Image (tube, rainbow, N blue to C red; front, side, top):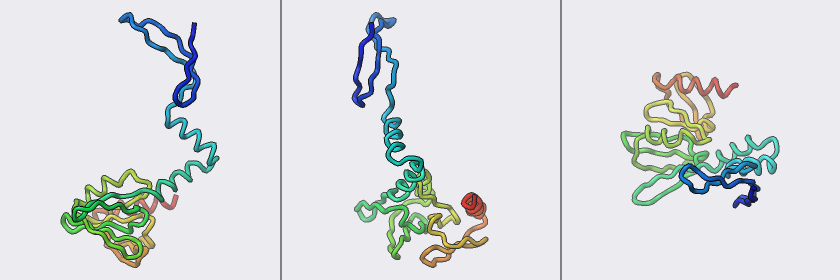
Length: 171
């Protein structure tokens, strides 16, 4: 005979108890048990409808934060508010909306790796610049103009990064 189980997620699972090779009991289950992620996806699909993916991407964009430490204090900044990161040796300067600036010590390569999986897309345009793609007002062959009016050089080494992003954003 089978037994009826109620899981923590209120998902009904029917299972049988069988003897394993070592003589102990093990439960084999079949039914509709879902992972927490599957339950969340289903919930948000029902709540948000066909626009779920677009809305979730926008949510991740709006709330993505970058943590950093400066002068023994921890800070968090919304990545959407960052215009660009600039570096001079190991000193990183964040230029943000409203002309706010923050400074901390780290390699720009490290910052780039830390933020590459965020919904906010940053493009490396120079060994010293990592720019927020949504804050670029104008793309040119040798420079970009940011939303605050700053004009940043695009080096030959990183020109293809910028061109690739620009082509993909037009699709």
